[in-house]
Length: 449
Ligand SMILES: [Zn+2]
Ligand SMILES: [Zn+2]
Image (cartoon, rainbow, N blue to C red; front, side):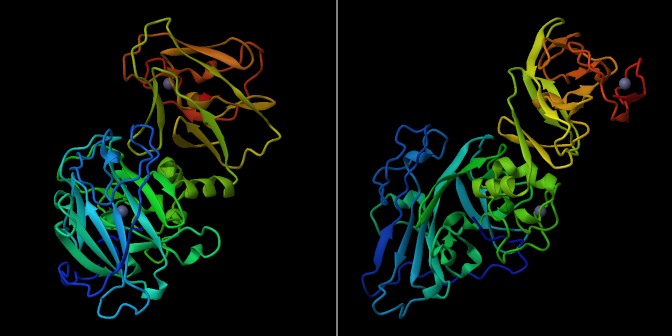
């Protein structure tokens, strides 16, 4: 999706005259995009939605929003005599769902989308679709008409028009190349094309289904969104190269603003990995396939979480429930990598749905003939007075016990110097020297492990 941004160097086009009541003069060819949802969370998933629902849609919530989908209707004026007398031959009708509003952007030119109620992290914000259209016969122009949902449920023709404007391709994006003829198609969005970019966006857009003519997606809250807060998306999640819509000077104002928005491909490796779980699957698959990255997979056991430091440089294992002395915190299995493998390439660790960039030194345990990948446990921090200890049950399995009481939220630590595989008596290969900052009275200072 490539909605416009008020932070784009070129300002949005001025709004055209409201011509919602203008008679077309002839019968247009009109069809509605049927939105079908394959969502196990809704009992009515897979049902095509009437473009003019008779019943009032319920508020957009995770449980109910897919049962009454906002429709994106595409109206194409008759092609026999051309778009004479009209500003645009293609008209997109789109309805703002309850819970959202398009308002003026007070800080910059243009519009923005705000939430009109509170949403929690993980909430389904709305379901929408975009049309894949060949706009080349129409000069890449189309008209976008935006309606309020409240009035849409009245008889056809009486829904309340909020805004109408003629856009060129600044409000649409190049459709992914899908077979012959796909390159000419553009993804044209409805009301949410007014959503602005943020380098620290609060929404992402898992796709639902894509056909040759339409693409359906959900909008999901990445974190809590309060009523009145702007809803933003990170264009890098679904735009690999930006296709002429680069943001040279990003004004998103986020603490971790990247300065520019030049698409996913322009991000640093760490930035790519940090947002990989939110990316459009096509971008993610391409990245993993072309970068020669090996991905390890691991699952967090119950009671364990991974937290990232404020600066994003350190990750820690934390207890998500309390542990008493002697409790088994978790059991884990080692994955061995023989030394003849190329350890210089990049490694990712996928823990549950999140990706983590691994350093070949600090996140692997180096043995004489091989290295060990220990999955999520590679983020356990060292302490000279740790609260956990590993005991190997055989060459490839170990158990981590609590040696101190660990409260819920407490950082789980071990002594890296005790990482030798005692079960097989292998000598740890000394590869890392680091200055310990554990702060314990018995801190050994410089560690070699
Ligand atoms: Zn930014
Ligand atoms: Zn120490």
